[in-house]
Length: 100
Image (cartoon, rainbow, N blue to C red):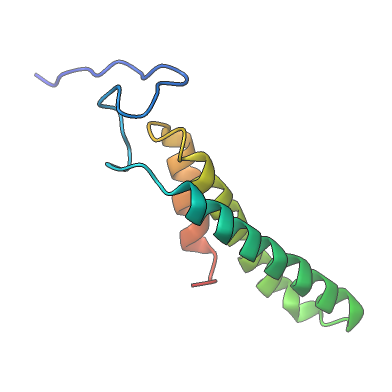
């Protein structure tokens, strides 16, 4: 018979429970740096798209925006390593965003 694991508390501190999704604590510094980088890339691409009316650049903007959301989720995961919602958000957006 399968053991039922109770839902983790809303803000359990790192290292205090067995509910970790990642198996490690994601780096806060890397999350902040890559969020800033992809934020700047997204803004520059939006400006370029609007200035030169290069509407095909929408796809590049969408990709950079998805990567930005993924890295923001990764940054949040530094404090919420047990959250399935944050894990799903960051993994889905980083996979869908083509900025690798």
